Length: 258
Image (cartoon, rainbow, N blue to C red):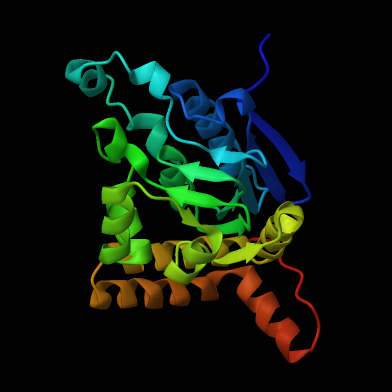
């Protein structure tokens, strides 16, 4: 059997998923996305997992979609298979937090995949970009929609229309990346962040993620009410009782994720 295109590993309550197509710089194909979606859905349904980390190789998180595979396609080929739909959109339906640990190139579909994660921790070697315009097309996996929300319209226009790459420091200044760390610290930093998240009450973590995402998808009044109702709802959980009792008793809470 051929080697999996996505490697998985469990460390405590954290699932690590690694894109495994190094010779193609982790170019994203339908097969890669199908395996990634299947693995992420399984971890999302696993009560023993509280957070995930998605990464690639030191040279490339993912250098884009698989151009060699799509070169000969026509309009009906991409339309009938709903290319970039289906499993390609599965990450946005994952309820548990997903951290992108980005090293090297995150270009085109790779940049778009990283943006679908909840936040990005970048190595100082990371390079981000949407170079599709050089191929006679445009970003089709969320680049024209998520990038302006992350970095402003002006910065997104600059990157998408010129196809230039943005280094890790610029990406952090622009708001695309949450933090930049030395290359050798990338996985330690990402796993540490995921481990902290996974130690929190899972219902609280999921609701917090949903509320932050609602801030980008609703108007202010709607998202404020959504936040308030989720805050109220958490008072029905055992973890809220334990968390507040532990605070009063000046000890670390022991969450049961229920």
